[in-house]
Image 1 (cartoon, rainbow, N blue to C red):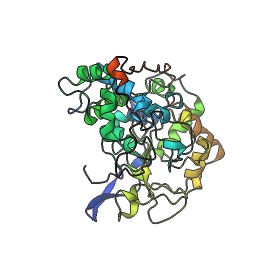
Image 2 (tube, rainbow, N blue to C red):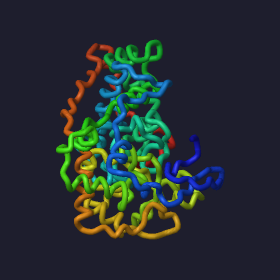
Image 3 (cartoon, one colour):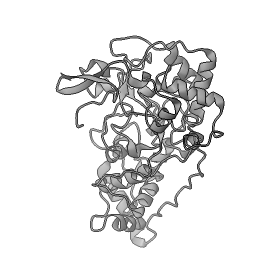
Length: 372
């Protein structure tokens, strides 16, 4: 879609060109369409395979290299922050903080988004400023407030480590260590980060005992009265769009990327609900403590302004209905095997290696502060 902005996959009524960007205005959500429970269940069947782009196809060697790079703190300027520092598998690939922490213990402006199921993602980060995982992999590395890395220096730093030279030559024959190949390897690994089968998946596959009666009522609410499906649709429970959901802060989100588009002011990426239980606190600003707080916000806790999404309106949920919704969202968490950390390649132990110790690379010239 290039510079065009995706707003909703539901009931598109018109396209309006504003300042060179196109945006889509939606009418009342088709999420209110009457379907039976069995019909709705068919909308959430898991895909059978992971998609990889033609320009960066999957290989096991590349994914293994990307996994090693992901957990290596030497990718940061000060050599102590890895991608895995903020994207901790124990927190469903988030960090459990309201706002992320970057270089020199800098508190960032937004909560760390998960990397779960991003193989199916579009327009990444809370404001959608990166179109591909390859771009996203490099963004935090180069950001002065995040990993504070000089992207020219990181190539020389990795080249000074013998095993990395070998690993890159295996994954990228004849090309070796380059910034683009660092991005491709990390992106390939990130596309393999997919949550396993959850109780919800077993239920839609036919196991009626996989989830509780309360959770089943919550599923019905999710797709009907609560209209969560208007944005959290499909097996991954996100349509990858951007909405102003009425959070009472000054962060304009997507509006900074596409200025002048009214509905994108204060709009943020719709996150997946997969394994949401492990990813508290919630929202781009980490201000909502648990899933009950989230439901309360959508019921009647939002602020009203010109950019507020048409999908956000007073729901008038009862207390039991709110409980049912939370019970349903709990069923989206899978219990996967623990993630084993890789053995990181060692520095050169030869005499030549003692003469070429790479210091922390430091920030690149003109590096700007970026937030999740």
